[in-house]
Length: 205
Image (cartoon, rainbow, N blue to C red):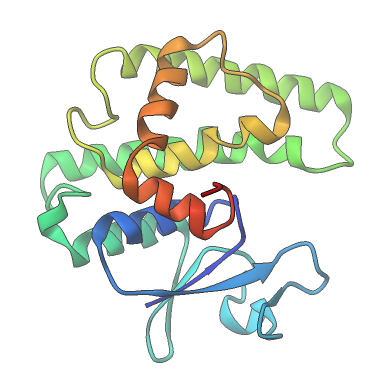
C-alpha cells in the first residue's frame, strides 16, 4: 500500500493506523502549500485523488481509497488480529463509525476556519468557542475510559489525536481540559503513534 500524506495533516491518522496494524506500506509526501498540489515526485495530486487533498491510500494498481474515516477502517480490516476496529456488522463497529463521524464533522472540520489566513477574526473566535464545547463533551466521555471505545486503542483514537494535535500549532492549549491533556499524552506515547510522528518529522530522535 502507498499512503499519500502531508506532515501533521489529517493524513497522520491513517499513517498511525498503518503503523498500529503492522502492515507493509510506503509513503509519498505531498506539498499542499504548492499550487497546484504536487507529490515529492512531481506528480499532480489531482492525478492521484481528483479531490486534490490528502490522505489517499493506493491499495492496488489503479485502486485509490480516499477519505480518512474510510481509509482507517480499511486498514483496520486488513489486520483484524490487532483489534483496531470492531468486526463489521457488530454494534461496536457502528459505535466506532459514530466516533469517526463525530471527529470528522465536529472536530476536524471545526478546525478548518482557523487554518485559513483570510478567515475573519470573529469567525475564528466562534470556531474556537464551538471547538471548546466539543472538547468539553470529549472530556466527559474520556473520563470514563482511557480510549474512545473503552480499554483498547482504535483507529478513532488515532484520528482524534491527529486533530487535537493541531492545538499545538494554533496555540490553543488544553489546560482547561485535563482529561484531554492526559489522553493526548497517553496516545502520543504509544510506540506506533511515535513511529508515525517520527516518520513525518514531527518527533525528534
